[in-house]
Length: 310
Image (cartoon, rainbow, N blue to C red; front, side, top):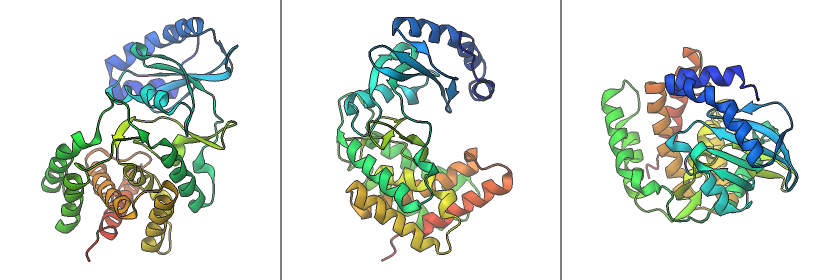
């Protein structure tokens, strides 16, 4: 039987409560059953992400692979659908899936991530190229981002009224307009949905491959906003924030072959969302409170800088 990492078990119980504890009790048995069914043997220490464990395995047909088993959650439902549609294009290959158990057998990549590169432009350029590769016609059955457009706008208005913040009205209005306009006018492309440097791993088959997709159908420029958000800790150190911000957008848009204006608008939308989300729920990696305050204020600055006031 595998041993579930203690930090993963603790965070799962903190987030999911009793259902999380019950799932953790079943998890070693789930992995053992899947190892037998998929004819795999463990090949290293169990690793984990935010919602699932990663078990390195060996399988006669594929050689080195990993088994990923995630906590059952609606946000994880379409991950295997995305991998299946890509077929290894820009992302790790899917070998097997068990949707009932939220489990997959995947091509093994290396543990090093794109976030470990020191050159910021190259991080953004690689992510843009991956985004371009992933933008294939979306298969039926995937959640369409345009279906969230109305709820996005409503939530932004609600946050603006209920939270204490310093965002000018025109900044919030610009994000709401993006939700209403771009949100309802999106291409039907398969996108990653959570594109950032830690979700892009170095690999043998290709230099870099994506992991952990949400599997949305929508605008590839949307992923430019999620990437920019993840670059916050890098951008916050820039001497000239505006220059660094727009250079990041330019590099991404060129590499991803998306419209720069759409990328800017989605990035502004994500910045406002992050500002409000941080005030309501906190931000990953933003502890203690002073760091949270610094990051929410930083997203305020991004949101304002990204407004086109021409």
